[in-house]
Image 1 (spheres, helix red, strand yellow):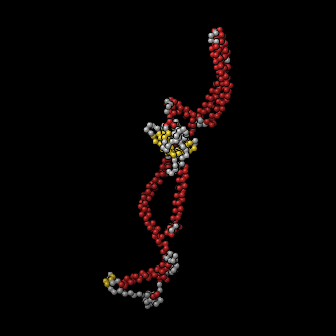
Image 2 (cartoon, rainbow, N blue to C red):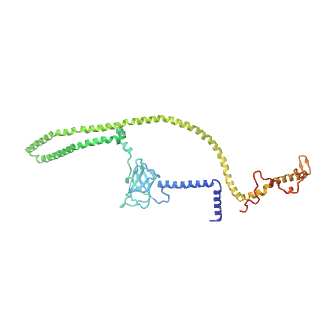
Image 3 (cartoon, rainbow, N blue to C red):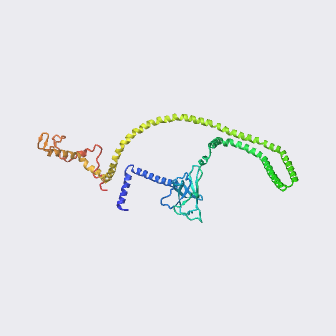
Length: 439
């Protein structure tokens, strides 16, 4: 480091230490810069910023619809669930598809038989692309290559499904969702009771269903056997007649068992009653919404008065801001005019700092003689002036001492300094040589 640089740094450091408030302001500015740099680093780390110098392999995938794709918002590209890149661009084609540009890290070879699927991260349609890079017998995809739309897929949006429904189906689905929302509002308190009752009913009904299933299987086996027998005995009328008689007897036996089936079905109304009670309990939930809605209505009635009171409080503040605006507007040019002077004053103070050490000694030497010097200049000017308001006259200088009877000064008084002996109105004068003029 050169001597001039060290001297400049020393002067700046001296200025920071001696100028009141400058060190505090510079420290605050440095602290703000450090905090800003740290905050910028944290933000850039959280948004997964890709630096311009990073190496990336770029290629494109063609999608039937790039729904919710937002390039530049850190939407990820994943291979086997691991982030390897980001979506960097998206544009439409002339045949109503979208070309999405992907930039991935080196070391992940992509083949022309790869597949790309656009998927949502959450229900808010924040998207990412999951990529199957493919492999042999496919060939490596070149830089800027394109995967066709036949090798990509996109998510189906709910509105696409709802658009397929007619008006009655949409109204029914809307009503179902509203009723489900109302029923499930207090479901943790009321729904378990109904579900436990339904579970009990289903457990009671299980033996009946089991028997019905067994009977259905036996009938299926019987019909199959009758078909086989009928095929074997198709040419023998006597045996066929006997078979029909046996079938009739079997069906008569089954008819006699209809009573058991009827008694089983009679147990079903109990289940429907339990379900009806559960739905009735659910409907009670809707009645609890009325007090909440009434409270919201009361709050909305009081809100305009509160806003009016706030407007009355803000009105005087607005007048104050308007009055201050004129003051600030007029002070702006003054501050702008003073800004160049401050830099000149700073340089002037730097130049006066070495001289300031000698001011005490100079004052001690010069100030005590100021009155005598003023008298000397005045008397000398009168002595050598050849004119006044009365015309031109010769001049003379006479000193008269009024403190003696003779009107003349004594020899001691001619060499005395009455001003210095009298002292200063603001205090004693500094002693001669008190100033440090040698450092």
